[in-house]
Amino acid sequence: EPVNYVPGTKIQSDEAELFDDILRLQKPDCRSLLEELKERMTDTEILYAYGYPVAGKDQGRFEEALQAVREADAVILTLGGKHGTCSMATMGEGVDAADINLPECQDAFIQAAAACGKPLIGVHFDGRPISSDTADQYLDAIIEAWNPAETGAQAVADVLLGAYNPGGKLPVSVAYHAGQIPIYYNHPNGSAWHQQESIGFVNYVDLPHTPRYCFGHGLSYTRFEYSEIHISAAEIGAEESVQISCVVKNAGNCAGDEVVQLYLRDRFASMTRPVKELAGFKRIHMEPEEKVRVTFTVQADQSAFLDRQMRWKVEKGDIDAEIGSSSEDIRLKGTYRITEDKWINGMERAFYAKAREVRL
Image 1 (spheres, rainbow, N blue to C red):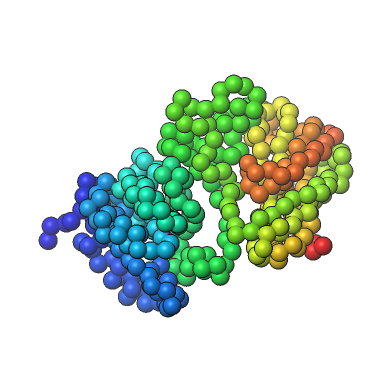
Image 2 (image 1 turned 120 degrees about the horizontal axis):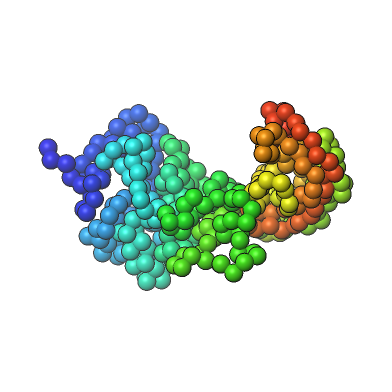
């Protein structure tokens, strides 16, 4: 039989394959997000309409879907691509794309749905994180679901219905455009977007220098306050450690998880060093108004680097410590000093700071 493609693309359309049926045979307990919501929300009328494909520009099904948007009180848009191989997919093994943004048809539908004036929630299923000016402008909330496997619908439904308060953080920096790539938080000091701190070149001609979403970013249904940074010693030797702590408070109305992140910056070094590096993190669960003191134990050799002779060196100098909710949402800062140079066995150096929590 001839292969049916998504209009304007070389991606096989969903109607042309039995992939869904195969999955259901292999994973009989697997449910779609629509099926999961219908299973749980028995007292709620759930409208469904197919709005757009996983690629291309086709808007042929828009009107039916927009009618469902007009009739609804709130709207969930499932966005993204399809995992697989070759022409069956928009991502996966042997599948590449030059454009990191949402397909044109999906951006167009978001904009059309926004004109209906209803709350819009986007759930993004894909192997890469969402990147869309339209989504940023018009969606009231975005859930990054990645490729969540056979129980993903249950997990996403938990978040949508408030049974679970999301606490995840991005493991990557998300670009606005493929032209920004590579873009990463721990770039060499004096390069990339952080150079705007000291010189006048703030943006590209047509884009910001900064990521769309920074490394470590992630929102919650509650909010967290940081205070009382404490560094146990102003100076340490090359074989010593320092304790860096802070107090985190759940200042919202519901329980939630926060990932407290510690970054280190070698202010001046004999080799070019990253503008900052993740040194440790601790995920903590807190009830409303609860406070927790989080303490990181940082070994001096976490700041070691390869010198010109390719030897691992702990170098004397000032180290900036930054604690925050993401690589760019820094709440607290402090400094300590390493007092001596020392060459070490790189295989024995500390990798991440140990962390502990104390309920207050």
